[in-house]
Length: 69
Image 1 (cartoon, rainbow, N blue to C red):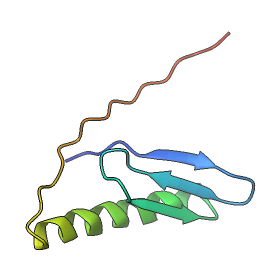
Image 2: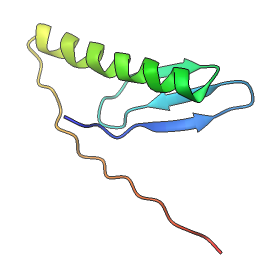
Image 3: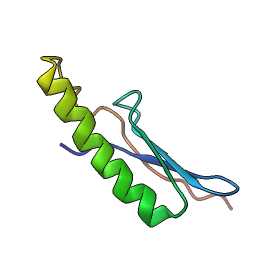
């Protein structure tokens, strides 16, 4: 499964969230690090849901970008 990930740059760090997996987040000093951490967080989150016998949400969020002139 592929989940959409939102990465936001803050004044001193990067944060990542997964809209389809509430509570699945990561924070790091660099974009590369936050991408690695959120990948690990998604795997852990899904594994925990399965171990607890809870449903794993299907990815629903669509991502696109727009150009503003």
